[in-house]
Image (tube, rainbow over all chains, first blue to last red; front, top):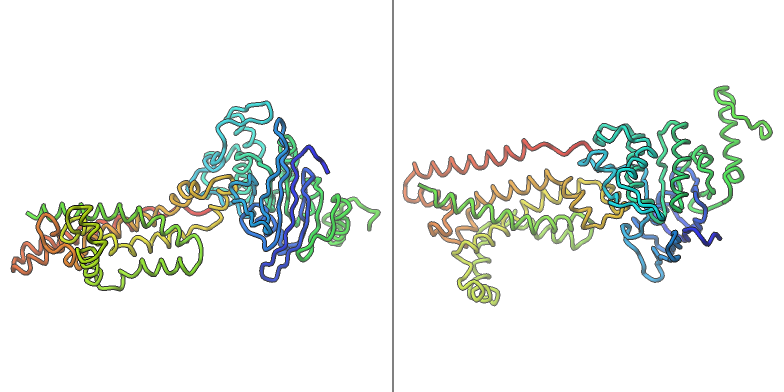
Length: 266
Length: 220
């Protein structure tokens, strides 16, 4: 267990309609990917960790460790003790599936909505402008600042939502709910690579929810594979998702359109 | 010639509108921010004036706030005079009577705003209070405008509550609609006609304001 970085312990039992969630996970890697088909309860898990929903039974503990600060422990949620910290007090950031940009604000106003005046990172103090520019470049939205949300395409909205979240500070945990859907794959891989650097510099763990194998491999994430509300496998992507990858290759092969180099498994 | 009644009516409408918005906005926010029996009950109570004859409200306010009840006696001690037949009394009656005209558009307006915006704000670290002023209220601006104009116009045109609670004292409680009634009873149809046209003009200008207002920007 890495003792010098922020990690989270999550235990959730929850019932919502036909879905019965029963998961226990430790977010102690820089990036963890929750991989499952749609409707497996991934979004519900993120909403519970963020504090938007309450689990029927559960306990979510954040072990925070920041440079120049003593380690701290925050109990976000503990149903047996009746603890439920409000979402805005958890410092858990989430980029939701639907970007929900504020329609009455311009794109720039959206991004700086909760951006602090002085950004202190470690020993460095960044000016607001330079920090903002770094975020605009990170999320590839520099050219969009003079527009309004209604003028943007779906992929642009998702990147602006990402920028808005990064500007508020990465917090104690960053939750990404399929935020790269609809992005062209080269752009997506570049963005994920830069995000990895960005979150690593700030010591913020990331939980990525996806059903896209490409994203998982690009993020070099530790994979938790879910099936009907439970985690059925965990480990490095190449191990856990080998079967999925092969199936994908098999499916693409007959068309002759896409041939991926992995002959030994065919 | 009706300047006294016009001034009194406008003063009543402005005062009522301001007080009502101060109460109705938080109440409507609370009603629309969840589902529970008590919220539905609160909404039903605030809608009562819509279906009750105004004279019923006026009558109970007259009796309830008069010297016969403890509340009424407390008010008399506080103000030095009873609420009935005073401008303050008219304001109290108007606020209660126009409550549904504020609550209904506001609740509908708040409910039309998807929860994802407030959730997004809270995940960026904004408290519920903060996101209400930054996000909810600006997005509900058309509803606030509707509520403001409806309450204002409704107060200008109200009759029953004013007559029961305020009587017909020129300069103190004689609003335009009461003055109109007064002129008709005197057989002064020309004066009554002037007042009626004035009331119609208020209504047309106010409603034009609501319908001409730019609608909310397309949601993203």
